[in-house]
Image 1 (cartoon, rainbow, N blue to C red):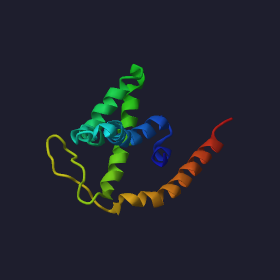
Image 2 (image 1 turned 135 degrees about the vertical axis):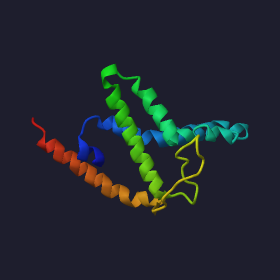
Image 3 (image 1 turned 30 degrees about the vertical axis):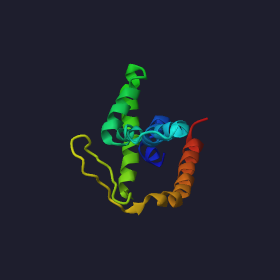
Length: 149
């Protein structure tokens, strides 16, 4: 939301959805399948691997393109750009984290070498989130107070 405050406020919900979708689609389905399959002895490991591309650039491109087709033709470019922008922000922040050497295969399926910058731990976002939430609220309030009545 802070990024959108800096570049313009149009389509904030779509941008935010784009920033959330990689984790929602790469993490929630395998967890749900595992919970449902637990009484049967659990799900096979490949079930969780099927969803991994949703958290990589190739999956983000396909997902953004697919979702933008649900919108009217004149809005598709803007929706695609905002979804992909939110996903790029998500991936950029993930690349800054230390995942104990696991990293991300940015050029999957062409190149499989994992990439991560490891500047901070993934748990550090818990410390920064409240500050960013207050800044986002302030930006929203400032914009709201400037809007014509």
